[in-house]
Image (cartoon, rainbow, N blue to C red; front, side, top):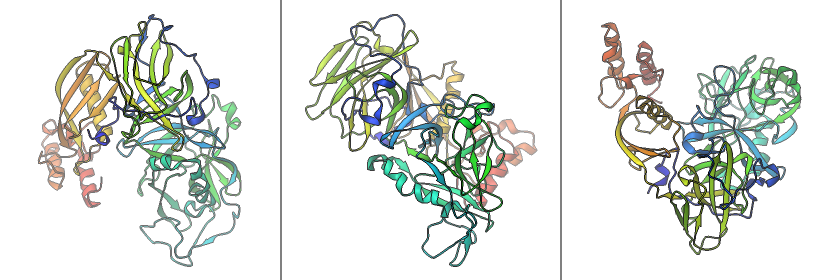
Length: 536
C-alpha cells in the first residue's frame, strides 16, 4: 500500500518503534490529569471514543474547523491545542496548532510564547545603522529590483536580521535530524520598507507577520501581493494569551518579522492587545513558527508515550508511521486485543485510549511476547487501539493502528470533489466536499478517520458504527464548460451565463474563488490566474 498517498486520517496498520517509559518529549506523570486505568479495573459505565482534544487523526489536525487559533468572532475557533515537538533548554518544546497549510499537506505550529526559544533577544542592537549588501549574502530573493553590491537596508530588514540568523543557526539545534526532516522550508514574503519592495525568504523556522493595530497576526505561506494572507492567530483569546485586558503585560511580547516606520521599528505581538511597534534594540522573546510535513503523520494523542503506565498529559505528542520501525501487528474485537509480536520489535507497547463517563483514560502495556489481552469491561468498538515505539535518536514516536475485527455497516456512495488543474489533490477542499456530502446524508461529520486510496479515486470515512466508501468524481476547479481544464473559455462561459440570467446552469465546481457561489468574481479570478501564468 502506498502510505504516502493516504490522506489526513489514516487509521490503518501503523507501528511505533519505542523508547524508555515516558522519555519521548519529556512528558512525565507529574503532568498527568488522570490516573492509569488497567484492563481489569476499567468499568463499563459509559464508554465512548476519546475526545478530539486528547486524540486527533491527521485529517482532524489539519482541519481548521477543529484546530485553529482564530475565527471571525475574534475568539479561538475549535480547539486551541498544545503539542510537543523538539526540545528547548533540555525540556520538551511546546507548540500550538495554527492550522493546515499548503492544501493540508502541512501543519503550522506556533512556538508557545510562554516557553520561547530564547528570551531577551534584540532584533537588531545597532538600530540606527544601515547594513550594506555584499554579493553572496542571503538576505532574501527580490523578484523586482534585486539588491546589488553597495545597496543598503535598515535595521528592521528581516532577511538581514540577527533574529533570522539565530533561527537558521542555533535554533535548529533544538531538533534532531529526523525532526528537521519533518520541518518544511517554506517561502514567506516580507517588505523592505527602505527600498520599497517585497522580498522572499525560504527557511525552516520563521516569524509571523502582521499589520499595525490588528488584533491578530499571520503564519504560514503568504503571497507577494498580500503579505498578511497566511493563517490568522488571534491575540484576544488563546491559551498562550490571557483572559482579560488587565493581564496584558503578564505574558511576554514577541517579535514578528513585519517592519514599521521609521525604519528602526518592528511590529510585536502583545497578548490580549494589538500589534504595536518597538525599536529593534529592545529585547523580547523569540517564538518562531514552522510548517510540519504531514505525509507520515498518523495522529496525535495526549497519552504519554512508550510507557507501561501511560496517563493523559497536558499536551499532545505526535505519532508517525514508518514501515521499518515495527513488524508486529495487532487486531481487536469488542473486548479483546491480540498482538502478534515480531522478534525484532524492541520496546513495543500496546495502547488503548477511550472516554469513560466523560473522563479520558488510557491503558498501556509493554509487550515482550505475542499475547491476547482481555478487556471485558471496555467496549473497544469506541476505543483507539494501537502499537507504538520510539527512537531516542529521532526523538519521535512511531505507531501502527490495530486492525478492527468488529463488524460495521458499510455504505457505498459517490461524491463530487474538486481538484486543481494540475491534478494535485487539495485535501482541504476534499474535506470540505466530504462534510457537505455527510450533511446532505444527515450524518454527523464527527468522523473517526478518513483516508484516500492510492489511486485517489476512493475516500473512506470511518465512524465507530459504520464506514462510508465514496467513489470520487473529480472535477477541475473553475472548469465552467466541463472540458477538464481551466482556460479563457471558462471565464467567458461564466460571464455569458450571468449576462443571460442563467447562473443556475453553471456547475458548482465553476466556483474558482471558493466562496460557495459562482459569480463574476470567479470569471475575474480565472482571468487573473491566467494572466499570472496559471499558478494556483
